[in-house]
Amino acid sequence: MRPVPLALLVLLLSLPLPARALPPLADSHVHYKWNQEEVTSAETAVQILLDNNIALALVIGTPAEHALKLQRLAPQRIIPIWSPYRAPGDWSTWSFDKTVLERARRALASGRWQGIGELHLISGFTPAWDTPVISGLMKLAIEHAIPVLLHTEYSQTQYLSELCRTHPGLKIVWAHAGAILTPAQVADVMATCPAVWAELSARDPWRYVDNPITDKDGQLLPAWRQLIERYPDRFLVGSDPVWPVERLDSWDEADSGWQQYGRFVDFHRTWLKALPPALAEKLRLTNALRLFGKDPATGQ
Image (cartoon, rainbow, N blue to C red):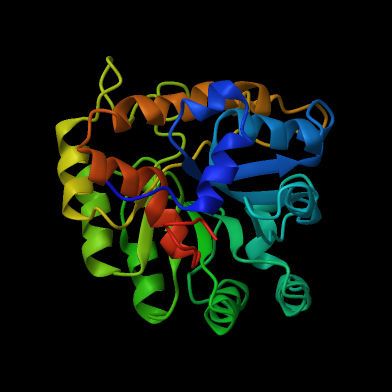
């Protein structure tokens, strides 16, 4: 058995007792929005991460600076992702906003951001993948060697496949593993786009209720397990703590997603337990650490 690195041992001993019993997990899809802050302070959010033994969290702020509020409190755990969203409905209009590229350039030049997203590419709301704003953001991500978190909502894979083929140097974290797509369709993208990491947030009984990744007992469906076993280094897990989900992005009411955080993460912990330990550890932690240049032995 390998000795536990000193840095990791110190981290584990600093955790509350309940969290010490949980294996560390990297959460690849976290939001901290202004209307979440109304009911969950930055300090409380960070404590929730500690209580759930979250070793790394990809945080999207709305507005973007909200991610930095968490990072200042837990700089070793928080990966801040720059978002162009500032106002209600931006998820549906950002790709037409001519200010996005200049705002992104200024933000990325600061060196504070380690990714771009979550960018919603939704059928009926999104223009062609090669339009100036979308293509320009992809080029900026390549220039700064950072991944882009993309949420695609299409019944076919062509949009994402064409985008990734056009930008071969682009690293993509694919939110919700294509949302409504089947394992076979996700497999097509994984085969076509070697720099896509699929994260599995919201594919649970509460959000994508018609297309979850597990059965009624919380175990991976066979087709999903086969796909994960085929690409063991390219799957991630995430919480996506937005609630109630049917409200989408309601700017006139508080978002209580952080109060649901434990059950979102426990959903993943349940099916991960049934995987071989080495495979489970990749999905739970080390794939995300490697994607963001962290040493899996120390988390640094």
